[in-house]
Image (tube, rainbow, N blue to C red):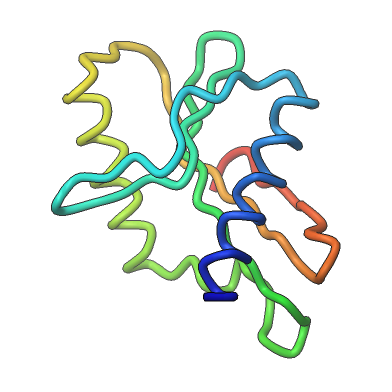
Length: 112
């Protein structure tokens, strides 16, 4: 399944990018029956819930274009669920990473 492999490679590229930028990866592909988070990372005293969007070509549009109001609501729900489940009491934000092309080029938005 090329699509799943590309998704895993994109998430790996984002994880490596975040580590190089000083983030600690707390969790990847955190899932429940009702929600999921691609990457949970931490830098300083803040947790970042990172949605990863991969596009193989620009003809599909920007990965960031696919973070719709509906997707944002899903991300907010998943972040709150993670916070409640882990009893995390600190600051957190929703983030996104766009990964593009065969070389998995990463662009990261720290807060969306």
